[in-house]
Image 1 (cartoon, rainbow, N blue to C red):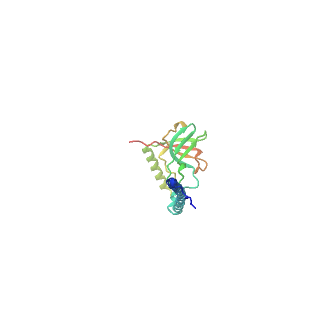
Image 2 (cartoon, rainbow, N blue to C red; image 1 turned 90 degrees about the vertical axis):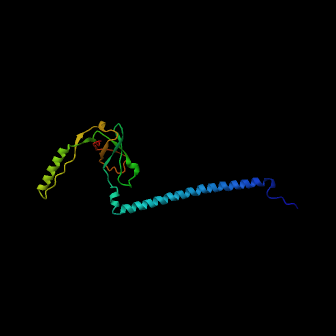
Length: 196
């Protein structure tokens, strides 16, 4: 009784080639699958480590400086765009754990919004006001202290006075800690730096 070979001798190289190609494809698919799943695990492990480090810093005595207050009603930033009654501005956060998506905000200006422009006082006028303040605070001990003079005076301004590049201090009535867009109650246009 003749027994037939299980593999056709004329197709042996084809079978070996298909086997090698199958092993390579299987290896490639396995590599991609396990690489992606380990990457996802690495991302979650990184996030867990970052969150633990953030909590540790925030719980430390040094972290109190970096902690964002629960309520924010005043922000300062540079105007990036003016479009009708909406002003986009960019804030420079001093806290490393603040949400970076909140670095760019939009202010809505309504008829009730008070806009003012800060104008630097003459140095002699400010110095005279400061001397008067110092003298008045030395006179009576235990009396309520007068408010020190400000180096700026305030002039009324309009929405049209706000331009790209201006630095604004914006005040809102509501808590704007996590608001991307809000209505301003007061806007102060800071003086432009004097170039030498």
